[in-house]
Structure formats: structure tokens, C-alpha cells
Image 1 (cartoon, rainbow, N blue to C red):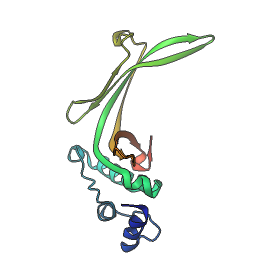
Image 2 (cartoon, rainbow, N blue to C red):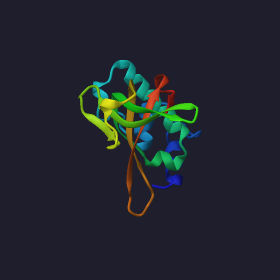
Image 3 (spheres, one colour):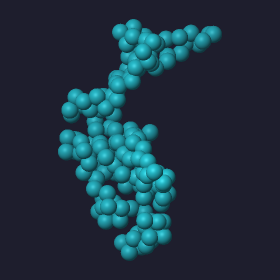
Image 4 (cartoon, rainbow, N blue to C red):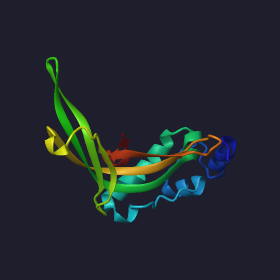
Length: 162
């Protein structure tokens, strides 16, 4: 589908300003079902934040990017970062050398990164935080139809992300 065809679908659904307003718009215009892997495990407030995020995020994207966006998972995760302390002239720096991201509903590691030169038992600083994380696919327009899995952290009840 090209941009012109997508714009016609928006107009046919009374969205002349090309802005989504509801989850029904997401399904009806883009064919995206928001109930992805992990959705049923979310708390009510996390579901609301995720649903708000979907509408806000899609409305921030250009039309071509919207056409490539596909959510595949939503998780409440615990992220643990391991850092080492280094002195750089007169400044103290903390350099992250390991990170774990664990789905709190299943206990499954979604990401486990280690710099093999450093032992996590010797970390100078260990930080943990709970995050609402969305996993999605961005299908590029390359001839090979390469799919790139990406993720974002959702904060502020779905109005901000990073």
C-alpha cells in the first residue's frame, strides 16, 4: 500500500486531519490489533497507558512510518543496570557494562547484555527500575523487506516515551 491509498482510507473513516482518535481507528485504518503478546498480563493502569501511547505515538509519526509500525509485545519489566566507577581527570564517571531486562509477568529475560571484561559481582553501582516496555517491528521499504525489532519505554501514562 502506498501513501495515497492510506490517505484515502483515513478520509473514508472521517479522519481528514490524518489523526487517529481511538483504538478502533488503529484497527480499522491500519489493521493493527493492540492486544499483543503480554497485554493480558498488564494491570489496568498499564493497559490504559499502553493504549494512550499507541494513539499518541502513531499521531507523531509521518504517514510512511505509520504504515511500517507494528506492535508485537508489551511488558512490565525490571531493568537492572551494572556500572563501574572510573575517574576521568577530576570527574567521577559510571560506565554501564551489563544490563538485564526481565519480564515481570513471566520471569523471562528479554535482554541480557554483558561486557565479558567485567564481572557483575564487582559492579560499583547497581540500579533497578520497573518500566513499561513496548516491542515493535519497523518494516523497512528495502527490497529485502527487512524487519527491525525495536522497543520503547512508555512513561507518563502513555504521553511520553524514550
